[in-house]
Amino acid sequence: METEKKYSAVSGFLMVFVVFAIIALGVLGLAIVKNPVLAILFVVGIICIPGFTVVNPNESMVLVLFGAYKGTILKNGFFWVNPLFVKKKISLRARNLDSDPIKVNDKIGNPIMIGVVLVWRVKDTFKAAFDVNDYEHFVNIQSEAAIRNMAGSYPYDNFEDEGAEITLRSGGDDVSELLESELTDRLTIAGIEIMEARINYLAYASEIAGAMLRRQQATAVVAARFKIVEGAVSMVDMALEELTEKNIVDLDEDKKATMVSNLMVVLCSDKDATPVLNTGSLYQ
Image 1 (cartoon, rainbow, N blue to C red):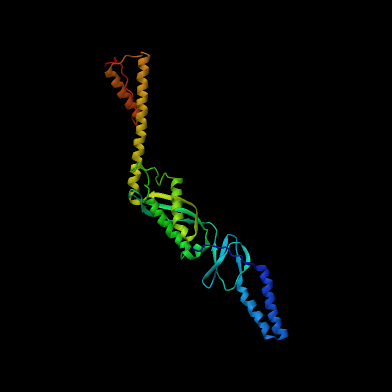
Image 2 (cartoon, rainbow, N blue to C red):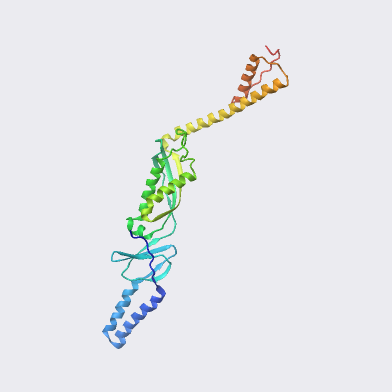
């Protein structure tokens, strides 16, 4: 399988003098010597002019002669090559792809909207020029395919799949690495190097966004209540131990139950409790 190979081109500055010297000899031959043979030099000089080319920094020039790949100029500068070469410039600069959010189904089947930002560049000019029809369009299509495949492999979060170690929402660097690996496998055929790939947009689709928001709110409320009850039980237990150790008051089981009930109501209520003063005995 053929791959990229460097082409050493002749300096364009040197060939400027050579070509113009050939053209000048041809003109002088016709004008002064009147020798038609020297007119060939003039024609040769004119034919050589299309061979001049400029390669800018972080650009390359792919050269083809009669359908045969001859090499790629990777150095920047002013060069001269065979004027019969077909020249194709390919940029080696890093490029951004900010994909529009697309609707996909996650691993559980929930419709979500996901978009990525991708940094890529051409690494192999031969593959980019000849192994795919249009490498820029190829990157766009394969990037969308990679997003769909990755999104279908992991859940949005672990609400329904509590055993999921990696989720799209909290995966972070792990998800980015998996996305980069998926894109690299797909784009290697086009000679593309993936420099970075990250999710830049992630949300539930509009048809379930409201329901999922309420679910997240309910989960947050339950988690908060769990912490409140856990703390209240600890405080009640501590209060009973302190009262018993210091012999402040001797409570039977019924009064302990009443005290626990009252403390739990005060500590766990989401509103301020209204105290009631007992002016009678403890058993009234």
